[in-house]
Length: 203
Image (tube, rainbow, N blue to C red; front, side, top):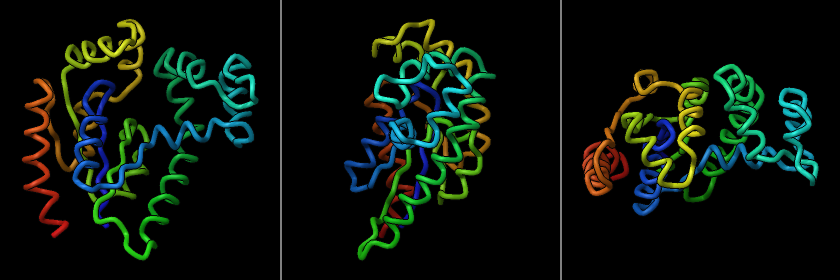
């Protein structure tokens, strides 16, 4: 079972890359989905998050409201770091458990891809992976993509300011794919990477 992590800033193309690998048989785990699962009522993270960010992040059902938490957490790099300190240990435990469960199946998947946006901010996670692929794109291109998806430019810029830089992400990556061009060019780069680096490991 080969485990590849994909990381990159908002709008870089991580979701497109994850879909690409899924179409080639990979099991895909989204770390953001694991984190959202930890915001449900009864989660041990609820009270620490409310203590850190206020009652405004508590949902009517007793869990955490993701949109309200994002607004509070991405107000500054300091508040984003506060969120990461609370959430990342629990996500690590959940992710390690998910990978262990796949590994002990009668027929484990040959390729597992983990979408981890904030991998640089949680370096402990790297130990769970065989390799890390960073998707890189200029801030202007990423901003254009995110705004086209419906996020305000102000919100997108605030989130970018709270994330690691491409240089920082490259520093922990085994591979880097640039994604400043159109989707067709990105697909070609992913295909070349897959045939060169991944397919031989799955043979």
